Image (tube, rainbow, N blue to C red; front, side, top):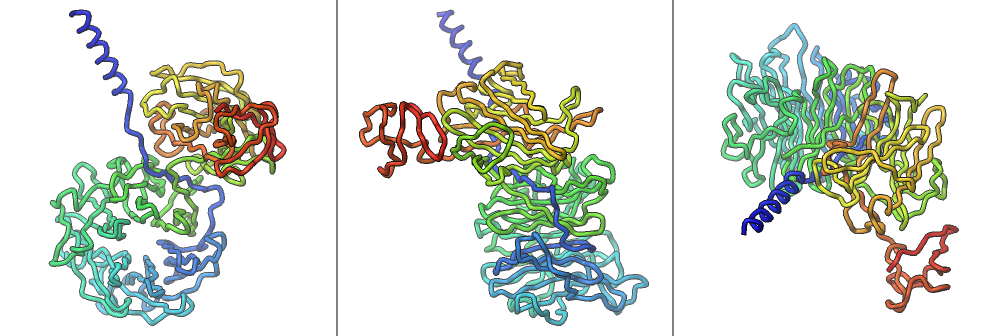
Length: 608
């Protein structure tokens, strides 16, 4: 009996240990920014915003001696010369524009007149709009929306639009004018029911007593039922600064009956927006919705870097909550500020970060991914990319990195029945393989997709130097232990401005009998930059090299080559001169003693 109890206790402890080592996997998207070649949208200006028009063009606006617009007909690669549509007048600069295209095609730009000193009562801080009904070629006269006070301390700020499915157009803005004796501020809303020609009086929709709700950006969530507004909020206990926050209401409620979100509202209506608060303090939030319903949030923050203001982006769930996967779109180098930024979602879900750097407006594209992809294709592991190599991206650039350190790189994957392939091109002049601070690439594989917070025995770490030197470590349940896998092959080619590494990992070397098509496989990447005194390391967003649960799933794309059958299912696949058929019953090639001959390559047939 005692022996049975001891065995039971031993089993329970083992189970508890396994449970403690397992954590929930992050299943949201992460954004990979191609920051190597940012595009200048405006050579000067600030507070830029961008949308994709119904005809496929991109339209951007900014403040620069008034309100200017520019168009791109090639998804942002080049931009037209700016057009001034709202010039400054009467010592009153027009500032902080926003833009929207309505369902009927009308384009509306809103902006914020801000009188300069000396103040006079006839020049007020306000909100105005202009309309275009001919795709942005011509613009209407200025349309009045709202006036605040005539001095800075009681002004209004930062208009932002939302069109509802009913056709109602909403314009949100920050408003100090109701609080002339305090420093408080609320979020106000004006409505238009005729496409922006006329507007209602403002109503309060958010106010935290004693603080300053500001810079609203509204969206309608993918569920079509919830309005969420990102604001900056300096009223959170223990934070002591502005931090991105969301307020919300249902579309059915739609801020009716004087409903507003107060500082004492439940967390359902006012919530802090990401897991890095209160560390990443800062304001100027911007919110958008991805085609899959996920949400993306940006804001500006110094985030432990002195006075160097940067743009940070997070991915939230479909309820615009639980924001994670923090990333920085722009590599700033010696640039000391990335100010008053915004986001756009274009094409099939590409995220565009628009930022103010050194007085100009630049953009970079980001690619949200929930998993990496690997096609079925045998590769010649020689460190070169040729027309015979078939990775997921035609240029082998599925995974861009480098926005954090400036060491820009592109990685990609492929597989066949024998190997998993990874290639990485790193733009690094004078890359060094010398210890103790070399350049290099770390590639991690969890062969069973284990969701653990320590590397188990099915986790492998491949450390590669620019000269092709390879070291391999395997998890032991707690940490990494160096091991020897002689069948793993790595090749490198070093050029004057870059180096490329190509890795072939046999499935058998990582404990698998075949390619895990349809199975679990997760990977991680790190790019190392050494300068002789230290080593900078850039990892994929929210990933840790010691926690496989944070790594990215890698999907092996199923093809006819991985579904080969014979007309007679009981026949051996390794019969000499056997015909090979796909699932549609079509003959695809012939085999000779277990070799498939196709496209000039030889590939072993998998066992049935």
